[in-house]
Image: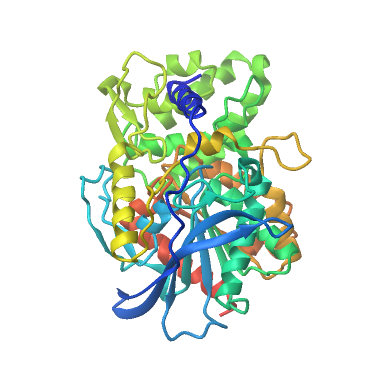
Length: 497
């Protein structure tokens, strides 16, 4: 067990001893405020609504309150104006990251150069907001943010892949009904685990009578087989999945020969090696001949900069967590997991894995929680007498049901996405990926999405974007603007414009 996983285990064990803190008072009514933001040189007046959506079970009993903040442009025709539902993942993360950093009307001015924000980093108008293209609804999953279990709800009601999906279906239908937006074009925007949720939800919504125009998958976790999950001997999928990302991160930190090469062309070369000679060598296992083994070691060294003796000892299989430690270990530096551009002093230079993730350090989390807590109370006039849970991984994760209904396989929602795209030939999907994301590697996402088994007539409905950033693509200014331009085209295509 790595240090990171052990710390999460201990935190979960400690929190298991304490019950969830109940709300101190009834939630306030929905707060409505009016604002303006300038995007592309044009001022857009909009209305913000912050409040709770009540969830009920099949018997009509209350089971939870889901917190959502919506931004709707004033003066637009609701029948033709798109609306997009945003969420982060975890499981156990609120949506403050997307809300406060990506395409909302305001964003925390976090540095673009992979350095942590200083305490008190301001929240500023966002000229890259998507509000010029779509209305926006940012939703916090139950157990995060201000969203909570109430009434007859229990952790088992919400904390699972299918359970969570059903809750979000109800959230979207409730918001759509309350705001009279059934005629509007509808989009889902999920990040990380939120992409698995998006695939489950789009299929569920369409089976329940609500068609969806488009789904944006940012830093996908659609299939856990492609992630770092302590796979055992013979389960080599993850090593192929992560290699192009590891090479890109090594390229960024000038650890490979010829780093002046164009990143995209370099990554293409590594992709071909990963799915070809590398995958073939791993599949041969202990029968791999010495000559081929030596050639593979040399290539892995050329692409990652790691010492050939280390690669040999690792039996050609570069564990992502250990890569984060060993890439810059000679300089006593740990490399970021969520974003390989980030780096920080390694706490245990003698260890074999990174002791923390410089991407998600306390300062970045503090910037988002602090900015949102001030913003929701003072700008949106929504005042709750309890803290905003930016993350709640131990409590949600401790109770999470990772098994799909009727399945014993590793979690995946790829079949849900395939079914949704097949049954709705108008549905479009955009997959956005950061080259330096060591949490949800882009090549694993490509593999998953290229194996959906779509009819040839539907394959053009799936589009990809790749950006010089990490898991949270939007933290890099150049990447955020590149993705915004791609999304504008995607929305127009999905609406048939």
